[in-house]
Image (cartoon, rainbow, N blue to C red; front, top):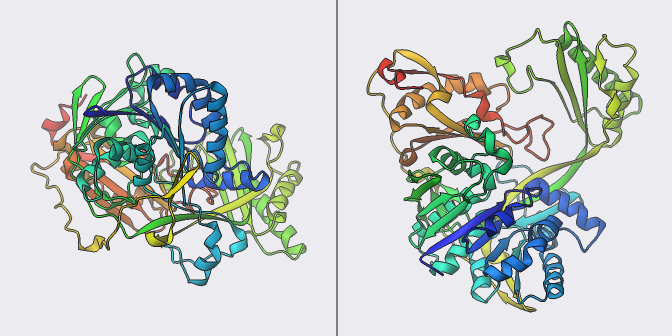
Length: 595
């Protein structure tokens, strides 16, 4: 490998645009990485494997990303690393090997296994394991759909060292596909904490594809014209862990401190203790610097010893849900929609009572467009057209069926203006919940399989780590009193996302001088006014002085999280938007500089 390792990020989720591989192959890249897995994806793959034991992986990886590009991959000598194996990496690899053989190409495929812990569920249940965040008891074993440890990067590096051209894994941390390539290229050891942290951050920037090149960007108008042709991110990584983020020439989007900073803050929780299997990262020290057009240098990530265990993500079935959208239009549309929803749920509850069934586990009514996400900050009540969402969950399938039936039964009895039945009614679907815990590393048998040979994988040893003992940076101090209000959007970029049942909102100041005023404005009172209607737990506030950023971690914020919540935004993807018009008081001289 050259002194600079060029890694392209071609996939941020299962369903990503398939043309990213071909786009990146036009560039001088050494490795292309793919991230397909999320908690909800694992539950979907579990159902697919239950129906067909030969499935359980992301078939798009083979049919759309790799298959059409096999000859180019082989010709350019580009390495491929992907977690597309999901719950069946061996089957995914066998299918790929058959495709390679049919094409007559000399590509070696390696598989990293060991993340699937479903064979040990009885042991975990008997040990009294509880959920690591909520303390909930271990679910009934028969309801569990998947249980996977988040593996690290050293097994991937081992596979590449053994000559693999393509590495397929099951569940690993999203950034491991990039960090593994770095470890192989530069020979990093488990004790090279700062370098490992830098490589992990490069993987974190790449793992969501075009979210680092203008996707989901606060300044979306600046990139609107080129979204259809948006470029996918490339990290040019140096042996010291420093890297430059860029994108292919003549593609849409943009790479600047805002796009890279937003992605760095995305879903990281505590920025001084970002736990990965190979290293505990501290991103509060990171510096971002624009070094050219569509080129941002990322440096000074730091880290410390790896944790003792692997985080295990388990999904389990917990009843059924039903969701239905209706339209209402005309005068007083919101009030009419609320009355219809209340009557539907009242009649459905009565029907369940007559059938001697328990009541709904949860219900959710949202008037989309005026109050769904905004709560007390909703702006309009006089709109003449709304979309109504009614959602319910119940231990049995009869629960959502009762809601659907009673909604139809009210069609002739409700206030006028109801519409939206033309698309038909929804169908009950399983509620899948997330249960997380930590498994000691020595209890997880990680292996690397290449050319039919299986060998134990190297892992980074761990040590205890206490976040409470860390010294936090001092809060920034306002040097000049503010005289006039501007909006947060004028001073900062903002990005949000989820972590299970927690919401994560990152704020990065457009200029360092703005940070103290932003810090002061986003106090507890302001955060409660913006998020109190949905966040039921505490809100932690973290400072990242190196990048002039703030990160908020909101506990008990998503009504169960993405795979269980009945909310319209169960993954907090729009939480950032609730802060953009927040007033920030700054000096008049500073306000004059704003565009």
